[in-house]
Length: 375
Picture 1 (cartoon, helix red, strand yellow):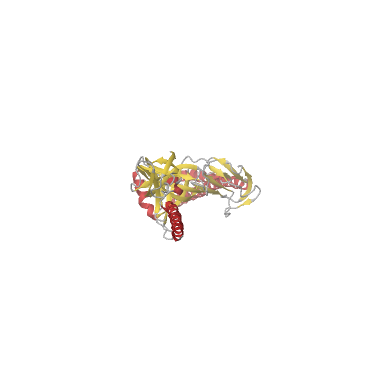
Picture 2 (spheres, rainbow, N blue to C red; picture 1 turned 135 degrees about the vertical axis):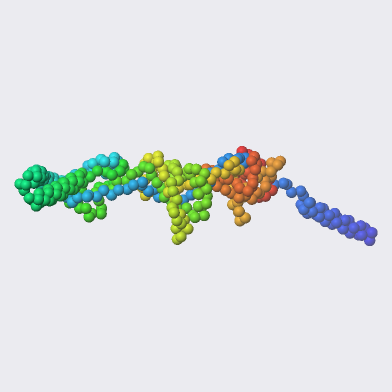
């Protein structure tokens, strides 16, 4: 009886041990199970290329006209007519306004009459002087009479010269009644209507004429760029591009014209002027434009798409697909000037032909497995 009971106890203990051993194997199997490798991230890549990259100095500029003239009257009088339309293009010498000239014409007629009268007196005095010179030879007149007649001739010559000056002055004043354009340009809005009395002391003028071409753009660049600009000028013609406010549309292409002769100490900048000969109507006076001065060109420099460049706390970097092509390497780079949608890479950060990730980089880290799905 005791042996049978002992056998049952041993059987129960054995069953418990077997169950415990089975449970241990079950639980430990999860710890020793081999974890699967992470799936490769799909990415798009682009090969690094070599190309010439222009180096630009960007600044905000203002379009300035070559010449802007305020047309004012040089004589007082009634503005009888305005012979231009607002916004019209006028040529140099074209009549644009007229002033009532009747009073000046009357004064000129009087001056010419006075001149004719004094010329007649002079001619008579000259003939008398000639007679006196003949008479003094035979003793029929005195030396005093001859000298007096000679002085009278000189006096009348002065009077005639004064009369001629008066006539010329009135002719000039009369010519001022016909106002012509001093430059080729576009007339602005009319400042004075016909029928108004205009004076030489007026500051508003009749109209403003602006010469539109060639247009110039004035912009300020930091004084630190002076060395690069001077070097570019020493190498030849310096190209300047004018873009619209949003830097999307190229308005005109011109050349650097001049540098100012001193740096503005309050801003640390120096003014630069560029000229655009063929700007047409793309550049308008006082318009704000984005000026790009081409200071240099990086010859055959590695370039990558701008979208391939990532930004981190330690600077810019790109992901480069390494051989055999299933992993990426994080490569810190120094970016240079950008042109279009590509950016130059300086200090040999990447090499020609290397594949850089352009899409899918946000899920990558150094050494991440990748699968190139597009190039």
